[in-house]
Length: 320
Length: 297
Image (cartoon, rainbow over the protein chains, first blue to last red):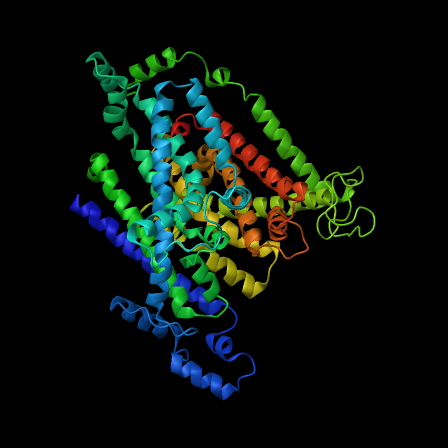
């Protein structure tokens, strides 16, 4: 088991390394450079060279990457070449938005999809099963960018039940409880939109697995012992049926994190995606690298945690 | 499904089987054909848009119905804020969506499919290396690549195809690799290998025909995914240049103008919804037919 975990960890570290190298190459391939972005095109060549030398951009690329990597390993993400702020502070202010969006949406997705799947699997092909399958499938076919557009219009403008676009999800100067409530209200709409895609995926996987599990012999044994259907579903069938769900979760969350920008943009949140898109035209190399690193590490850590949970749910996986 | 262990068990299993697979296939059902009909209509409109009685999608109608006109006989869905015919913009938008969808899917299936089969067959270091790169591709913020390519080469549908195609490679790779792993240990592969066939030959002649149905299924799903992603990119202003219509840009235009022009708000969204629904439904049916075991996962 330790060997399995170690192997996974090494792979994940390699993944982060590959991603940062790829990102480094890509941003240096882009036309334009930080000196031009900062000094504009009217600057003299001398001034540009001086700035390049000051930022360390006149050194060979592998050396630049190496310096960045060593600094990162010492916990220093550098200073934004464009705004002069430390990359760490830029990330710290926007990271929480994305983390909360992902967590919130996954909580909603689980609260909806798990009970739904369990009650649908109870009667394979029954009314609840059919309608839940159809409805989740239909929602799955509505892309998030359309849903967020319509729901913002409907729930914040036509019937203003929820706080509108541009509300600060992390208000300051409020008592703790009020701040938490405001935060949950502001984040509800975007998280729900993100959750809808996940609900469809999780519901389908779990329902299909449960239907198969419920035909197994140990379920018949449990039934003949006289256990209630609810107890069989929640305590006996759920655990062996959730492995596929867990494996798909890692992928799903990775796609979610990588695609968060659409939601941030529409809601006016200052998340990592927004910071990234702002940093790109300014050739703010260190900010771009820092955000890519944080995104990659998050995806990797999430996957590792899910691996751990999967191992706990089905210990056979580690032994294979 | 348990593997029959002996010839007797195999014979018994064959005798027990109720009917040949072909006869037990359940019919595709009415919804399937409605979906296929919509996809067919879309393909016809996209290919023959020029020959259909549609206006030039960028031609203005300043005088006749004017801006944001409601539906009329001449303009079935009315006009947008720049007095252009919405129906014809929708039809030409289908063209962009389909060209980008099919192009990117071809890249994804071509690279992801062949690498996936080869990787699962060869195993060893090659497999480990390719898998690592693919896994990294999944966690890479695609928006960086999109902006890099667009600012490097300019906004055009070919660049969007390239980026979306490359980013669909890792997902397809994973699926195809898993599908290949299950058939790479079968007897017919061992037989081909023992006859001295090269890896490429085994993959092309023995593995590909067995993975091909799964490839069809994945390409249908990928097509849907790419069309949705293109919509999101256009919505953010990173897809084809205006005034070329794409479904995403149409939705973006409608939301930007804060318009009350209902056809402009709903028509492109409904078109995207129907297309994604059709593709996902058709893919699901194909999967149930070609991969009866995997489809329960």
